[in-house]
Length: 100
Image (tube, one colour):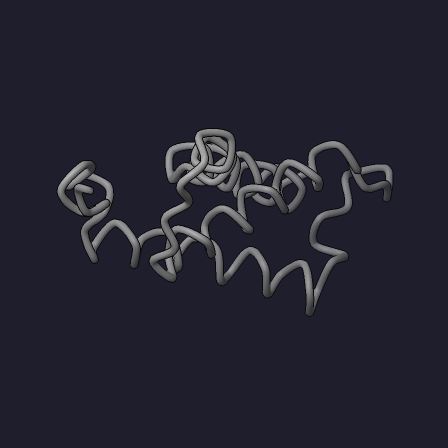
């Protein structure tokens, strides 16, 4: 069996895993310590967007700590590109909420 690092060297390296953690930690801390920052201009949460953002954070932690799922479904769900795009969506929403 081929090691995961050999199959996907462009995403399995330590720098990419560090990027996943560096993106996931601040977002999770915002949600944990100061969730009011995620309110929109009307004072409401977008629960669908928060769910997607938490999925991205979870996938960022999974990739960041070095876990490599074997099943195809879990690889898709916790893929780093999925994580980064969902966390980018969360950061964009955070920026939009602060400027509104």
